[in-house]
Structure formats: C-alpha cells, structure tokens
Image 1: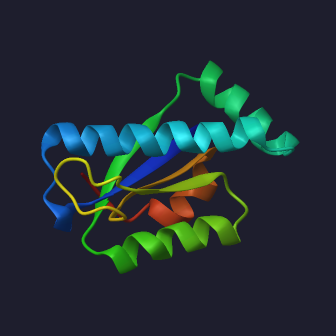
Image 2: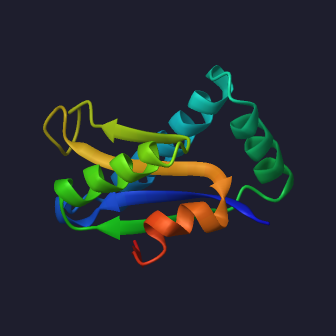
Image 3: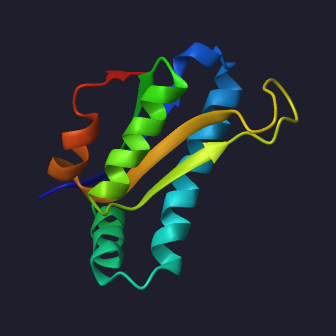
Length: 121
C-alpha cells in the first residue's frame, strides 16, 4: 500500500507560478501539522509510512471555489487529514480567497476516491 498527499489548486484564479507553489506548500505543511497535533494513531502511522516511502505528492486542479470546497468536504467525511488554505491577501489575491486543499498523507486508494479523476495542475 502506498501513501500520498493530493494537493488541489484553483486554476480559475490564474495564480503566478510562484504563488501557486507557495499555496501548494502551505496546504501540504498545514496537513502535516494537523497530523502532528492530532491524537490520531492512524494518521501518525500514515505520516511515518509516507515519510519513509518518499513523501509522494501530486498537484491537481479544479476550476471553481465550489469544487475545491466539495473536495475538502469529502476528505472530512472520510476522516482523512486535510487542510484548506485561504490567502492572506498580501500579493495577487484578495484576503480570504480559498486557493488550495491538501488531502493526506493517507493511503493512496482512499485519497484517489476523492481526487483520482482530477487533472494535473
């Protein structure tokens, strides 16, 4: 069994490359912080196995705020570690703009139930 993070960015925001990379990084780190701060043994085991397995990540895209919020909702419903990122508004976007979601680290087959059909960013 493999473990991964799926990071989902909004393509409709037309973020610059650096901005998109920063938002993806915020989402990835925030999801890991949530695991570390949790009392979930399963999440911590997944984190350890993900770390040992090379920390696989995939960056995917959606086209609307509604789509990214739905992905986040599905991850919560499945009990997966996940994060949703709202921009601080210091550069390209208005404050509070939802830019990214990260799911995992978690077993690939569970993450793929939510993000398996999305296209690469």
